[in-house]
Length: 255
Ligand code: URA
Ligand code: SF4
Image (cartoon, rainbow, N blue to C red; front, top):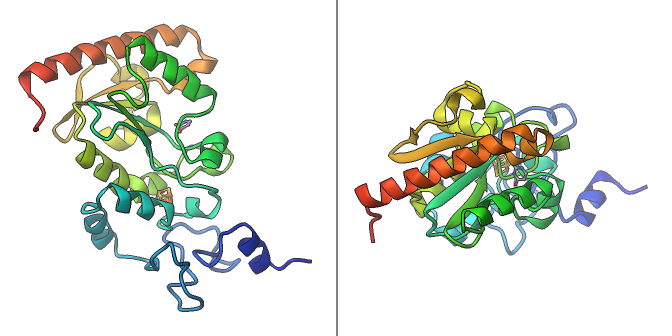
């Protein structure tokens, strides 16, 4: 029978990371890596991952990454337990100079297989909503998620996982400098607004994330199950569009 190491190698998961030990496998927090322990060299394509990197230092380091370094960093991240079950990290997709940033929850099975956000059923709905606004995932839109790795069984990300991944979303916002952020569903609204309020109570109003205007609407996966709220989501996007044009005249983007 194959040993765990053989299976990890077969799945191309070694030597970047491996389970710490069976006793600690369920715990949150940074995952110790084989390379960080000096047990085996890092693969040529990835720099060694520092185990248990200080969160403040990590945040500062991520805040200075350019796009290429950002994507490489996400791909090799072990800062929360979701790294254990991902096939591919899903950093985000779209126009890096977009005026609109959509933030979902986390990759599902299809996203995890493809490395791209919103490629399943919910993604098709999002695409048709974007098309109705005259936009698309490469046309003035960037799409990201609260967590970049798939939560097992598509469960809601834990607050600690969302916090561990927050520096990446913050870096994306700083690099893109969107005119408007659209939080899709509860995970994004909770993380970005620090509020546990319902979508129903948050939608229809202008919020802010730092300096950036933010609107909240339903998650497309929820809309697939709740047709009556589709009309409300459409209202939210129309509201968002009117906000985006008012931002355009009051606050021109830096060249
Ligand atoms: N749901 C999300 O929140 N994000 C995805 O990328 C796919 C489905
Ligand atoms: Fe790192 Fe985010 Fe993936 Fe957790 S979800 S391992 S913090 S990239």
